[in-house]
Length: 130
Picture 1 (cartoon, rainbow, N blue to C red):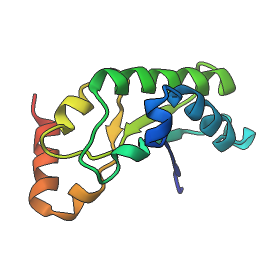
Picture 2 (spheres, helix red, strand yellow; picture 1 turned 180 degrees about the vertical axis):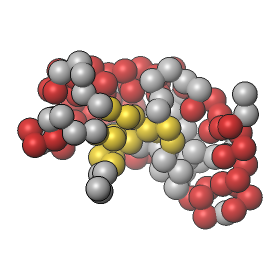
Picture 3 (cartoon, helix red, strand yellow; picture 1 turned 120 degrees about the vertical axis):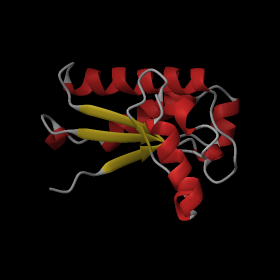
């Protein structure tokens, strides 16, 4: 019953060089064995440069990156793959709602903000707001 979350993301140098998609292609193809075909897959896009830094990818970058990951996974397993893509990388009360409502974002992977109850509760409240 264990559902793994495959975490992937590029470092700051790759991001600045515009190599995000190439890095994610390699990570996606290297992380999805054939045995996962027909199984639900959960991927978290966590740009390394954003983890714990307070930096967050722009919403348009998140949408574009999630769409790219989705296309890559569908190319491997077919369009009927059961796929969830989460965003992680400095998710906090001030940005969680916007990220969660972005196209192609199926959830967030909260790191450091989950360690402070008031921040985590604020993220939950913001995500549940209409």
